[in-house]
Length: 459
Ligand code: HEM
Image (tube, rainbow, N blue to C red; front, side, top):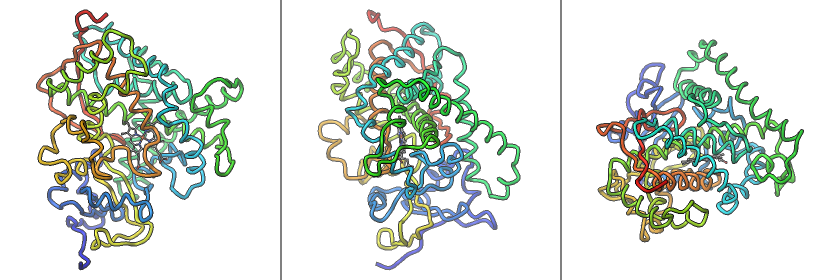
């Protein structure tokens, strides 16, 4: 086949394609350009970025011999906060390998079971809180699922309680983090000249970052001063385990970066997924009913236990299907290790960013059929999940750089959803609400509220 150029919208003098992209909700602009320019197109956003949207192209780029994660743009801006922590580390930084090998065992599905009591503790606070507020109270999904995910990851990672269900406002740490992430996204979409002129917002961001680091540093100092040898949280692993390959320990600075990373990576995605799932279920009462029926069959009126989780097959499919149609992660950033031809005809250089457009990948009609846009958990049951082509479903990223917190997030979401379905009849606060998106580093529903009413006989 002959080499052909990658389609690209016309560029603007000096600004390239920056004007084609909304600085606040940039992925939304990509969703709009995709139907016009196709499964592969490029934009000059302070350097070429190639967007790919089909399973076949993504499958090729997931080959780790030829491609790897690329930390640039917004992700590179987030390094101001999370440095060489797992999420924002360059592949070549030794700290990534050390932390990855030290932490992988404690993030595995079996190890995560130990966190069941902590997760149940936080989920139960959410349920109790809603019960007390009563059936007329409008629950802001983004707020309360953020509280849930934030408190859970902090409790599981370092036995720290934010206690955010006890206060009307979210923890300062959470607010500051959201602001820093929004600013990182904007910086990546602004011309460098403009960034250099914005001295004030840079100073403000720096002081927020220092505040956030202090929390991690204080926790490390406290644990070193008062060791808790019996504790199996992630902080103990980071402080006392050696990398099995090199024998190195994680440095205090890298532990701080990873604690901050877990709080960043661990709460937005999980809370966004839960909010999207409840939106999708409430828009489709038949599926909501099926999920509730399953919970009634598995749990009945009993207190939830670890053994129930693996029986909640329909709820699990609802979570997976949500991650497909409304993935909270908009894009995965990769680059070719060496200059290469994509699909045998599109030349990509090693310094060009390739972005997997997750939403359109997950709606590739060749894989998912004509109802690819519909929320239909059934498609993932009865062998549907096992039959998926390789690399068709990528909400947790790829290969060595895939999400380390996947098992943790899945268990947490199952527990929270099961408790909600067991206890409440959930209703849309505004039945005419239609999905709107907002984004910081991740995508969430905007202004989506619901109400909960105690189911008769469930006390
Ligand atoms: C990486 C998604 C929950 C920690 C990633 C990546 C994705 C992802 C797509 C790859 C990013 C990239 O390629 O640049 C999700 C989703 C979640 C979730 C959809 C929930 C539904 C969590 C949780 C944690 C976590 C609960 C808690 C610690 C991380 C870390 C990385 C990561 C540390 C970087 C891994 C590495 O590169 O070594 N996640 N995540 N995530 N996630 Fe998650």
